[in-house]
Image 1 (cartoon, rainbow, N blue to C red):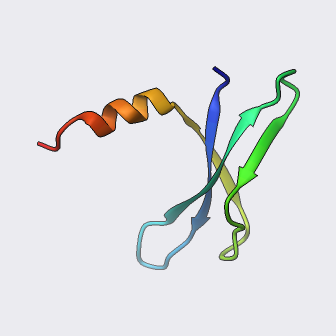
Image 2: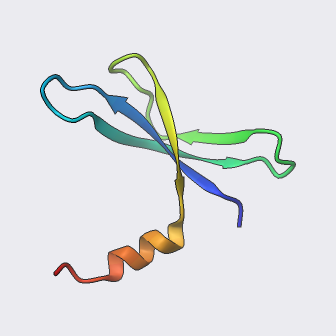
Length: 69
């Protein structure tokens, strides 16, 4: 499976931590020379900066299965 990334719009908030809004996903082209980026929303706040963070769907599913303790 190709490495996947979540795409976030980082919203700066005064006197609070920045808010990372998940707005889509990205994955490498089959030939490895670029990315496909699929956005569900466009950033309207701040400077329009987008951040891509690696995402492992299997690890995420396992973390969701663990009961809160």
